[in-house]
Every structure is written in structure tokens, then in C-alpha cells.
Image 1 (cartoon, rainbow, N blue to C red):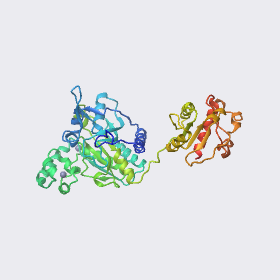
Image 2: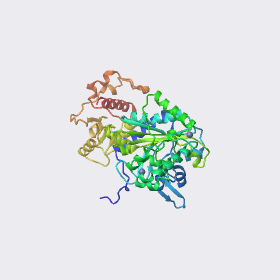
Image 3: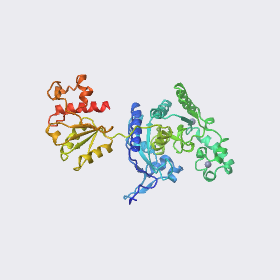
Image 4: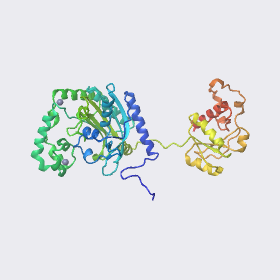
Length: 462
Ligand SMILES: [Zn+2]
Ligand SMILES: [Zn+2]
């Protein structure tokens, strides 16, 4: 066993899984940019207060799960447990024009019991839009999340929506919920018998049988919304109706964080186990700016945990394609200088390539080329060098034959490729020609270009 292991609850992401993660981020970025959201890179740690005041000190994330530390200057800091509070802190600090529309892809840190699909460092993508309380923005945010899931191929999704009201209507609702829970506290689950007062809304979120029984008859926020909250919610729902987007109204959707107001939403993936099937969610946080000491500024956003999304993809058999090896493996039998130069040129032309390092025998280099997953080996030895030639050898299907001489007409200048014109008559790429050795002449870019073209054609053909 190695001397060191990755810390408990974390993991190293190696290819191809790491590339699946990168693919998810890339597709998310495309979606976000289509709607004019731009990348925000904020620090991985913040002053402790950003999260305590932002997320709320009644939240379990803050009380139990946060990675807090004191740095060498005595500052109280914390690794980010979630993304939104940092985005709002950045908004208040820089005062950009609103709406401030950003996306991010970053790790978050929570000290929780390691279990399947849950890590102490996990990776989230998210969108936030700050400065507008228009319900059409809620619609935009929600559809960006659901569209992204569709784009990566996920099906069997369920969009749950609720409204949590605002400062006008929620206090009265909380009061009636509180007196109801007080009357029924002995029937709550063990944890909530003790803790229900800290945040009564969280009882609605509890999946324990006892709490489920109690909350069935609990007062519902939807019966307590003020007229502004009602209008806001109704506008959002009718926008979803107009576009035929299915949703489920969920009176118990309060989400884990204190800062949510009005719209909250969550997407569940039904092919995952129900206790852990939320693959993205968020909501409006019109009070967050104020709790971070800024002036009243509405905002809405969501985050999605990539580890969970990957599990969802796996549960539905969504594949991300095989891991790609390089296109070309350059085998140099002349001590490596040719490989050095050829790989440089190939990469200039956008052809991925690999080589071996250190002087190795032909056999060993071929073995390495095979292992790399490259399609084509480009071999240069004494004889090839002398004749300004390279040998091409298919690797993927292990064809053994040696290709014959290169098409001399090309070097004779029969085809005019001066001035960057790289179009060739179709017969140039005849199967017969392709199956020949390609000239490679590095000191002269013209034949090099021809070689590149032929190599590209070779690769496309396979
Ligand atoms: Zn409970
Ligand atoms: Zn209201």
C-alpha cells in the first residue's frame, strides 16, 4: 500500500471518469452561455461569516458539516459548503450591472458521513442571476436546468416546485406551523422532537416515517401566500404550462438552506434510489443580499452535484463514448529528434499524437503505440530518413503490411498547393493512393502540409 491515500471521503478522478465530469461541465457551460451567463471564479474559501450569515446558522451544513479553519493570520475561514453565498458576496463586493448572470463549476466541501455518491469534496455546477425578481427569470433558470439534463440524455425526471413565500406572508405561516408542531411534537422523529424549533420548515423536509405522518396534516404554505407571492408563483407556473413542461407541486419542498424565498425547485431522477435522487435544485433567495449586509436585492439560482448526475447517467445507461487515444503515435528509430519535430507539426495541425521517450527498440515502441490506443503509427528510421519518407502503419486493426512507395506526383508539384490552397482533386485521395507511404519532409512546409492532409484523410477513412 502507498504511504499516503486520498483523504477519507474524497477521491481521485482518473480518466475516463474525469473526462465524463469534464464533458458534463462543458455541456453545462454551452447551455449557460446560450443564455448569456458568464463564468464566475470565486475563492474556494471565504470568511466564515459569509456562510454563517448567508446559509444561516440553524442549517446543518453550518452546524455540523462545514470545514472551518483559522489561518496563520488568525482569520476565521471556511471552505465553501455551497456556491450561492460566495456568488452573492462577489456581487455585493463588485456591484456589477444587474441582472448579474453567472455560472460556475467548482468543488464544494462538507464534512459528512461518506456514502455512495457523497463526498467530502464534491463538484457542483450552478447558475445564479441576481438583481431581478421577475418570474420569467425563474422560468429561465428552471428551464436551463431541465434542458441541460435533457441535453446530456437524462430521462425519467421529475420537476418539483413550491413557493416558500416572502417576508410579508411567511412569518404568519411559520407561526401557524410552529403551533401545529408544538401540539404534535411527541409524534415527530427523534431528531425533530429535539430540534423542530430551530427550523420548523426542516420538519417538512424530513423523510422519517414519524415526521411524514405529522406533516400530512400540517398547514401548507400555499394557503398562506400573500397576493404578490401568489401572482409571482402563478406567472411562473403558467409559463411552464405554456411550454408543456411537466412539474409536480410539492408542499414539502423547502430545501436545506435558510435563504430561500418564494420559488424553490428540485429535479429528481426517478431511476435513482428515492432517498438520493435529487440531481439539481435551487430557488429564489431574495433575502440573502440583506443577510450579507447588502441592500435588498433579489436573486435566483440552482446547483447540481456532478457526482450524482454521473450516477443518474449510469443508471440510465448513458455512455460518454470510449476514451480516445491519440490519433497518431510517432515511432522514431533515430534517437528521438525526428519524433520531437514531427509531433510538434502534427499538433500544430490539430492532430493528437504521442511518442515514446528515451531510446527504445522498434518492438518496444510498437507495443507502447498499441497500448496508447493510437490509430496510426508513423515510423521513421534510417531508410525512411534517407528517402524523405515515413512509414504509416495501422494499429487499431493490427494490419501488418508495409505501405508501399509514396505518390511521387505530389512532390513533383503536379497539384498546385501554393498560397495555402489545400484542395485536392478527388482522385488524390483514392483508396489506392491512401494505402501508400506518405512523404514527410519537415524542412519544407509544403510537403508537410500534404502529409498532414493525407494523414487526416487516412484517419477519417477509418
Ligand atoms: Zn424528522
Ligand atoms: Zn408573500
